[in-house]
Length: 292
Ligand SMILES: [Zn+2]
Image (tube, rainbow, N blue to C red):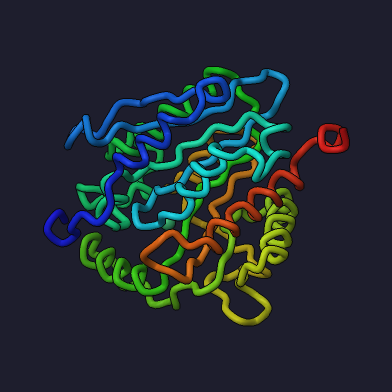
């Protein structure tokens, strides 16, 4: 993997931004570090100061290392809360902005051991340090009795790169090549129930308002049951599914934004993440808080 994927980014710039977040507003927690280079790869979560009267929204990004806009969106959100004031007014916000640190630096889906972290959330103990770290954060939330009402793992679909990663998946895992067309429009993965459908609908509406190009309307269907931007997710080994099992009653999503620029931060993709989160807040915020 190391030779196949040369380093193209430096996580140290992200460490600087996370550790510069004001301690008056946030708790920055380090959850160990990757053993391949502990000084270089410390793992962080960021939380607003816990308020027992608020429900919690839990967010994560960079589960796949080349999907860089979700992490950027999350860090900017903490740097400037004014982007989504209703989110911070109404909820505790807990986030893991960067999960796959080596993958971020090497612009690849998998980690340094060529494992897809988002297939490491089954019933067995995790194989990867990254998934174990995420489970630590989730266990801390459960121990603190956080009322986690919603979760989103922020993913992106890169039309060119993900076509290549499918080939890699077939070779590394010995599975048949996934032949369905790679999505070229943004969408949200949901469980097959009305709770998720209703919240997801508001998230998609908000994304459309901010110019998102959304799957559906007869243009493209990537899974049976997908409609108007919502795609039913069957996989039970993803972080989304793990959170669904961990936080009873919470609405758990993975968002799939499709950036037009596959190599740099894509401002439209960042905007779509905010629109998606704004829709989530609208759909689940207790009405009395938003009407104040
Ligand atoms: Zn992904």
